[in-house]
Amino acid sequence: MAGGYPEVQFYERELNIRRVIEECDLQRLDQALNICDLSSVERKLRLWQQLLPRIKPFYAVKCNDDPMVVRLLAELGAGFDCASKNEVKLVLGFGVPPERIIFANPCRPVSHLEYAKEHQVSNGTVDNEFEVYKLHTHYPNSNLIVRFKSEAKEAQCPLGDKFGCDADVDAAALMLLAKSLDLKVTGTSFHVGSGCSELEAYDRAIKKAKNLFKFGALLGYDMDFLDIGGGFPGSDDGKFGKIAESVNTSVQRHFPNERVHIIAEPGRFFVAAACTLVCKIHAKREIRNEAGKLDTVMYYLNDGVYGSFNCILYDHQVVTAEHYLDDADSLPQLKSLIWGPSCDALDKISEDLHLPNLNRGDLLGFRNMGAYTMPIASPFNGFEVPKTLYFQAI
Ligand SMILES: Cc1ncc(COP(=O)(O)O)c(C=O)c1O
Image (tube, rainbow, N blue to C red; front, side):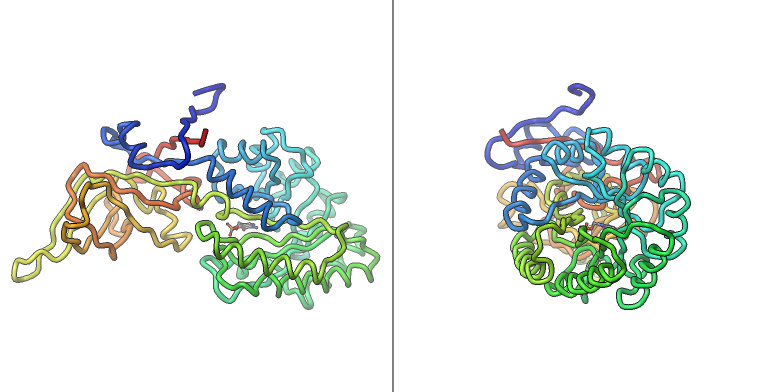
């Protein structure tokens, strides 16, 4: 611990997981380890600034609330999307001014609203009339950002069933209600769905936002805040480049006026690729067919779907494993089924892998494990959640 924070280890050029395993002697540990590359988060921010210069990223804390990640992004000047009072508290604790926070949960408990009011976190989303009345009572001078629904045709985790009002009819009704209550509507927001796979989704949504800005102007609102949500890929920078191009074209067409502040709420974009989970095989079993021939090797790891691999259940992630055997290319690849450590048969990590015949004590690494993993992990059955080791390029 340095100054109350965990220690950061430094590397040159590229973070090599094999070297980390050797140098940190991970082999001796029984607990799974999360290797977090803070420089990867910083590189993502630079990439964002290069490809989407007009759009300010407000990191979605829910995706990975690791204080080291949040602190780094705070120091680098990012904004933050918070879903709860505790997330707001965490971000404010790193000295982030309230203007760099959006409270982007359209349904907030009163105590959370009161906390936001007390700390002047005035930008918040809203998508139904009950919340408009709630804001009227508890935070009437806040900025209402109307969240409408505009989903991608394909996304890893669609969000539209839960949040976002209809953009054609209900959004206008909400704005009229806000006007009648003398509340300020300052902008709009949407989320095309997390892990969006449709390039055109952002353009379609930005067009709807433009119509709502026009309607707002008719009501006398001077709207100047556009929030294009999250959905950006975490481990495919090529795809991100294409989305960025489409978003830039769309905002240029629909919001050419620079007085409109444009933000986004990227979560997985920043952190997915930053973490590699290293697990140990603590047990194995061989499954043979009736002729006695080996069919499948089953491995039991020290982390599972109740720990960091909850992303398989909740975030629909498909994970791939890498082993660290030397000269393994010549070894036969066997059908392998990987289980987590608990006594629950739902605790299955993967059944579609082909790996060489591994032994108890061997390590397996899982890349791209930084998004929607650690904040949700629980020590079910008494198996501890992984410890994180932090690294940074010199
Ligand atoms: C309101 C809101 N903003 C942003 C995000 C982050 O999305 P992503 O990780 O796809 O960028 C989420 C994810 O659930 C969300 O609900």
